[in-house]
Amino acid sequence: MHNSTQQIHQVVTVGLDERSYPIIIGSHVLAQLPQHFPALPKQLLIISNPTVAELYLPAVKQALAGHELVVHLIGDGEQYKSLQHYGEVMDTLMAWGLNRDCAIIALGGGVVGDLAGFVAATYQRGVAFYQIPTTLLAQVDSSVGGKTAVNHPDGKNMIGAFYQPLGVLIDTQCLSTLSDRDYACGLAEIIKYGIIYDAEFFAWLERHANDLMARDTTALSYAIARSCDIKAAIVGADETEQGVRALLNLGHTFGHAIEAHDYEHWRHGEAVAVGMVMATQYMLQQQQFNAADAARIVALIGRCGLPTQAPIMPEHDWRSYMLRDKKVKGGQLRLVLPTAIGAAELRMVKDWSGVYQAIVATTHD
Ligand SMILES: NC(=O)c1ccc[n+]([C@@H]2O[C@H](COP(=O)([O-])OP(=O)(O)OC[C@H]3O[C@@H](n4cnc5c(N)ncnc54)[C@H](O)[C@@H]3O)[C@@H](O)[C@H]2O)c1
Ligand SMILES: [Zn+2]
Image (tube, rainbow, N blue to C red):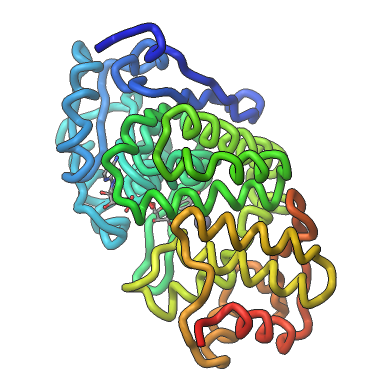
């Protein structure tokens, strides 16, 4: 069914001077891909995975009738974000003789987007790149801001580049097929934007938590657009993370420790959710955070189907995992800490015992 309401979409611009690009957000916008991106060249390589391709590749192919399409599928999972699978995509590009005028389209979650972006950044020193993110996390986080990468066996995202797409198309309809867990992981990053940057958005999330849990498209479109807006503003101010972009790591230093400790049972968004509670708890203990606002943070995270307590882990493990963080400088832990709902700071933290106390207070007993 096509009625006029389905044509409504929002546009967020990522402002990076001559590299600025639009993020188109709406329901059923997949079918309008060429209208939104009229500069798409004739030759296109679509990178996706079998799960997403089965669901959404037919619609994309239909929208792109008239283009020369090559499709390369990588397997479904973080392990496919590797140099080996990057190499296989390069083999496909070479085998089909795609030239510098081609464009790469990423159709999928953050794994596909990160790998496809790195392919686009490096094939013949850079070709046009478009993103069609299909997970909530990719729509509000990984598709915005130009970080691309593959993993090294010894470290996540160790090989990569900053490379901005020419456009991002977000179809909220794609989220109807996402698992509850993957959906909640995207909500964790959305809540993060409210905490670090926008008290009013945080209050909006509190009012609309039930709508979001029901995947109401109107509420979702707003939450996604506002999240992209905030990430775009931060990236526009600090593309290569010399300063304010670090605030996007709220909860991530704690979260990475949980992920490193128990990779199998914890998703990134779940670990970040607990990490945001820990960062808030730390500030509460320092008497630098309002108790009622701390309770609001924990309550919203819980209502969004996310955990608020960490698994039991030895103090030594917490410490060594957290000191591996990219923000550590000269052996000093630096944490993103909320100062109020809507504001956060990157701070050097000298007292480990205070940090550990916050961890213990946020752990299952
Ligand atoms: N570049 C950045 O700035 C940035 C930021 C955050 C995360 N990341 C990266 O993103 C990756 C995680 O992304 P993710 O959470 O999207 O994981 P993912 O890409 O693995 O997707 C999660 C699962 O959802 C499936 N899926 C995707 N779209 C679907 C849909 N519409 N319906 C049903 N299933 C669907 C996928 O096949 C996969 O099984 C990590 O590699 C992380 O490093 C990058
Ligand atoms: Zn994250």
